[in-house]
Length: 349
Image 1: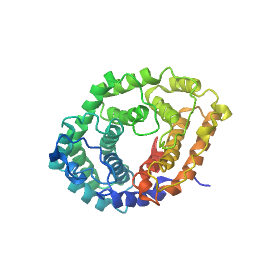
Image 2 (image 1 turned 90 degrees about the vertical axis):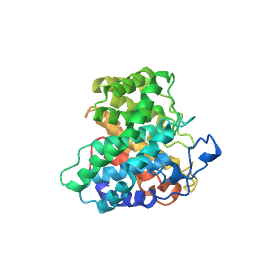
Image 3 (image 1 turned 90 degrees about the horizontal axis):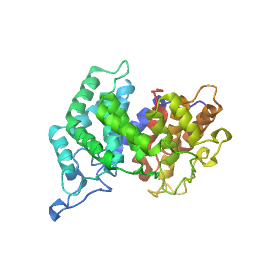
Image 4 (image 1 turned 135 degrees about the vertical axis):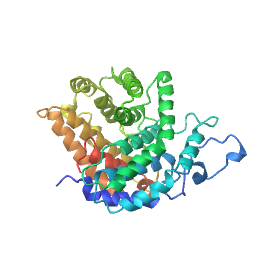
């Protein structure tokens, strides 16, 4: 079976995101109210990221739209995306999103998952376009990146302040996972040459994960959408020089050549895709695929583990890719993780 390419599905993915990026309800707010005056709806609180069921899903939905513009010159919805994001990425809207963060008791708003995705979006806006992308799109990306910069800077500041006092990692398979946040945020730090942020992220990853050995693979949990083990490995692939990573990876999963732990090679079963927590497991399969593909690129060509990783990538992708749409509980976010699996690292096209 031919491995699917993002170019085969990009118009579909974009259409899915466009169907909910401005859909205000249903909505799950992460909102600390300091008074009755702050009892407000999603659009009033977040004039840019009010759709897609929750703030972070809206952010990474925008990332997919921007990635589509940047990598696929023939994208059918390019003009529609530019029109929508032009209407959202205004100085006034960015100021409101930024001011929201400064209010009392909102220091942990969307930490660390939403923080990382906002920086990932900012990195995508700055990344070079492929040949053939039109002038209108290139100018729009630059304009949106400048407009979003106050919000981007606010989240950079939050990371720089948070990391020194974050004594312990968070190893869950859901939003609070710190390895996932470091992996995505490094794309921004390196893309803009923010040495202070990059150094803080890499130092913390080394502190948290550098001595990990014999990962026990007590996963998946029933609401995981990330593999705590594989996303840690993907984080360290980005942090460590290649030879150092290969040595670390051998200690972390010493029996991988024997396909152990077996659970990491077995796609998760999803019993009810209308349940917002259970359908996380479709995302687990997609994020595992993303990690396996990335890890494979770091292993030597003659390494048997590379072949196993490539096979696990394919197996997990085939299990989950047909499930990106079907019910809104998965549909509002799964395309993003499918896009990660199909295009990172490197743009397969």
